[in-house]
Length: 191
Image (cartoon, rainbow, N blue to C red; front, side):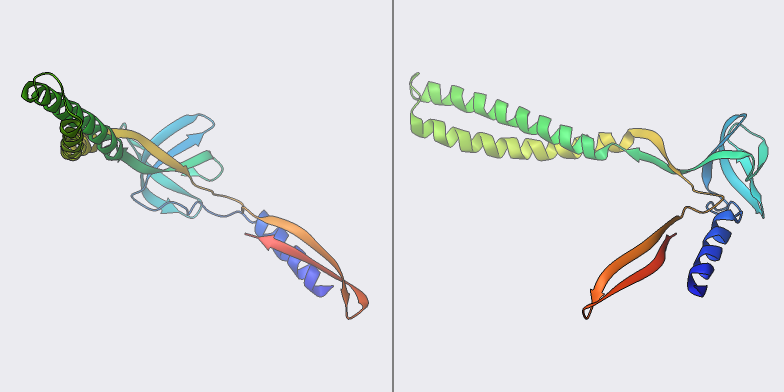
């Protein structure tokens, strides 16, 4: 019974205790939502129960745990280099394959006097595939470069603060131990 009492006291003590805003560091770009609105800026100082913020539009602000409704940290902006690589590569491959296939078909028709042979068609397809691969690589590199220059929107992650994000659940395990019924009582605390 002592063990259960200790678990209960610790659980409620941790859940009831107020914790300072320490999830952010000085220099982090944060977005703070209060009852009065939302501001974005860099953390310039920390105190025991809050932090000071240098606002993006100029000026500064001081926030305590009680004032803050939601707190988010900037993860920065991401570039679109992956999409550029995909679109540039696919476009380059399509253009290279189409141009090579058109030129080879026209050449085969002229050489064979308008009746393209199957041999000419098979060779032409292989050359067109190689051309498509080369143009796809060139298009992919160019697309990746253009995509790296394009910046996406700033992304944010929530910062948990104040109180504790915990789960408490009782454990009841009934079993037969060497033919004797037994019960295990306990609690699980997830922090």
